[in-house]
Length: 226
Ligand SMILES: Nc1ncnc2c1ncn2[C@@H]1O[C@H](COP(=O)(O)OP(=O)(O)OP(=O)(O)O)[C@@H](O)[C@H]1O
Image (cartoon, rainbow, N blue to C red; front, side):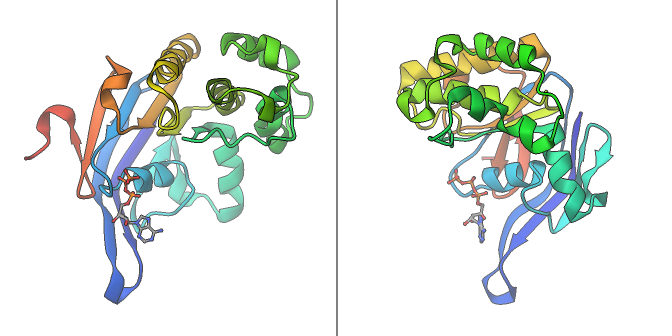
């Protein structure tokens, strides 16, 4: 489903170079629920940005659902990203003038799916527990409800891989727990592959895999060098 091969990322020019990723290799199977952890500045967001095709690596490649994304031109990348990837951020980033329903529909509209599959969207909204909020404006709902809407928006195009950067980082611990439960249940129900960057590994309980980033290198949980 996802292969990260020899991924390297260097920021800046000669005198001020930061080598953020150094030969990162791993593969994730369909349906895996994976956490990416590591101390501040270790390279987690850089890795997520490369997998999310928001930035290009200096070397190496990312293969998503059989497509070598290094081969995609700049024009093809955004369509591929909208079709294959779902994003959930720390802040829900909803458009406050739109309703919950309209926010959730946005990725579908960007993709230009000619007729919105209304019924499936309704199912999704029900599954995230927002049926009675879907016609409220996004600025009239709570932080937890906004993150539920952001999850639905991230899943609406039935992505091959869902990428989440600190999805519980802005929530109190009780609400964060409900959001973790929701992501896990949606992953199971829809057979989705999740890759989640978090500072709070324990909030997530049992997961399929934990990848630790240390100084730009990736390690499986049991093998992180001291
Ligand atoms: N756009 C950029 N330009 C230059 N350096 C950058 C850029 N983005 C990240 N870096 C540097 O790359 C390294 C890795 O940063 P990154 O944001 O990936 O770490 P992180 O593990 O996500 O950190 P945090 O947990 O604090 O968000 C850091 O040294 C950072 O300063």
